[in-house]
Image 1 (cartoon, rainbow, N blue to C red):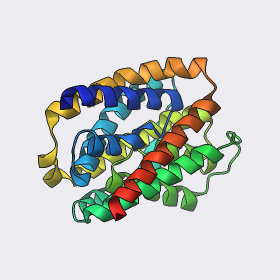
Image 2: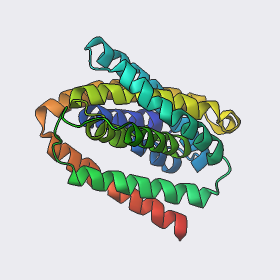
Image 3: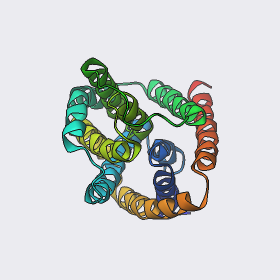
Image 4: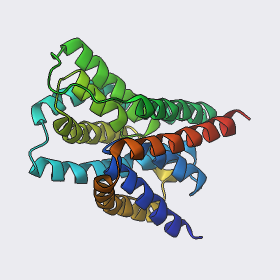
Length: 248
């Protein structure tokens, strides 16, 4: 099967996951680029940032039209993550392949566990604490910069639990935060873009965007809890495979 066809299929699957779950689906982008398309870990995290930026910006415009983006809150939260995202983006190219792969596997496993344990959060009742908000924003920026993931599985709970946003506003605002952080990380990765195959990334991103619309429709037919558990188990499997592959 050609690389372009694999990119189309992988992008569609990840797009459906993003649309159905509202966050966390992009964490599969890096493993897909490494194990299906033969990217190195550094090139995969850079390519993932490109895909995440494009898909997040596209989804952001739709959420903004529906009035679900808190621009001021999102920009303040993102501001705390810009520096760490840029530092993380610069650091990623200097990390050994094994370290990068193990770090990604651990974050993916943590995301899966969080999805399995997630319960409905109280909405709009948390008092904003500037220190906690800044720490959460900085942590998200660092993860985005180093590992090339959007971090929706981290951003949405932080915006609900730390900043007290309602869930719909948190999902829309998280897309703003992810887009800003991804752009900041990409700005520091100019030297790693040489290993990115644009003829593969274009189709991947395109089908991810289209798949997200199907994912939205899928979420209306099945229980969100069921979809989340299935995805979390798949993510745990992928994380375990990456960890074994890195250390053996």
